[in-house]
Image 1 (cartoon, rainbow, N blue to C red):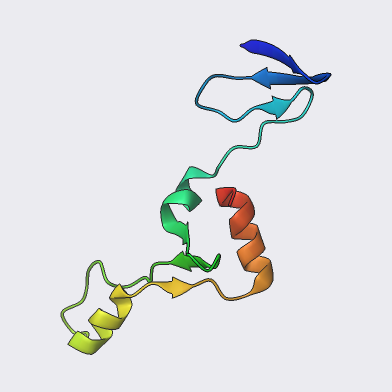
Image 2 (image 1 turned 90 degrees about the horizontal axis):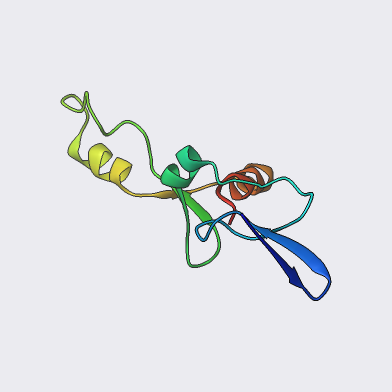
Length: 89
């Protein structure tokens, strides 16, 4: 663990792979399960994948299967803000 004093602000470097944080504050970590499921689009909206395409697709129509392959946005401001906090975007 390194300690660096930058302009009278004490910063603790955990290691080279983590972000620096002010001394005394809790380290906020990315929720890895959420980071694997959600991505930020170019228009800053969060996208998700649709469920129901991995198995039991024999009775579903081809159009329905293809529509399940497309990504979908997160709808709802509060839910989107919650996802943003989880993935640190």
